[in-house]
Picture 1 (cartoon, rainbow over the protein chains, first blue to last red):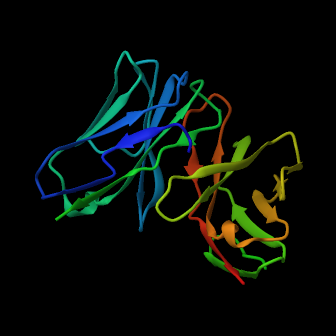
Picture 2: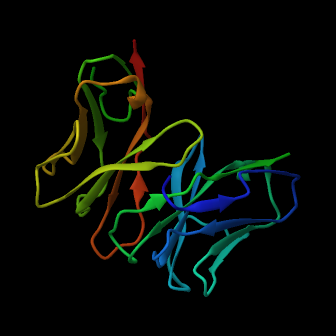
Length: 113
Length: 112
């Protein structure tokens, strides 16, 4: 158990809908990262927050957004969902904001029908 | 057993044998590398890391080798066990960067 929690574990929804994925980092970790894992793209970095502020952006679509709250938990919002958004979404956390070991949560499996 | 780069994404190894998983990383400026293990239904789990000022680092039953000249990273697992069956990813990043760039992954299957 990495200490990172994610909810929900599974999510099934329809195209065009909007969902919110939630992540609680390890106690004491200030940095949260979101990754998408799909069969054709592998593990792709989406976005990172450090102590409430956006720190880095990767291959994140404009339909996707994230935020980190004062209690350091983070949410990833996915809107106008398409079939291709079906994937595993992982959250990771680390103590600092850069170049540190990242601890991954168990992921949320999103299925868009 | 030994895999070659990202073109052979699967590796089958006999229990008790040593495994070698290879990774060709993409950015010659990368200076921090990590190996992750992902078991079915779980998130990636840190195995071992190495910084670019080192060529070799050993952990418990695992050794990571770094060859910066050819941008090659390998993970050696000694006395492979059934619990080692998983997908193994290498990841690279730069000091002062924030994101990890992952390789495609190698699926390791341990034969009893």
